[in-house]
Length: 82
Image 1 (tube, rainbow, N blue to C red):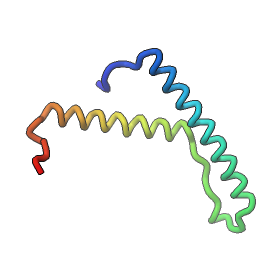
Image 2 (image 1 turned 45 degrees about the horizontal axis):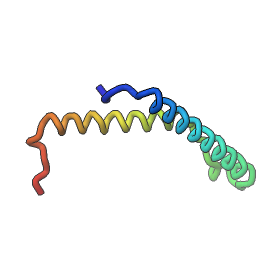
Image 3 (image 1 turned 30 degrees about the horizontal axis):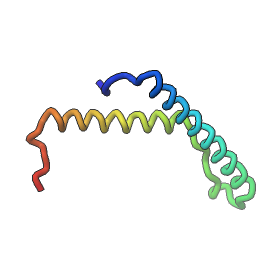
């Protein structure tokens, strides 16, 4: 369980953030295209980013952090006492 489901407002905000991120990735990939056209060696060319993969990766990291926090909260004996 990853907490409560998103409210409609939170869902709308998440959708807007994802759309803006996808637009930023589109612009970045355009710059990569421009760079790849002028770079003299094929080995120096850059690869494109996939916005959906990056969003999925961010969600996976978030989910793993939430799970780790739940484990820590369930077992208070794991508190770092310095």
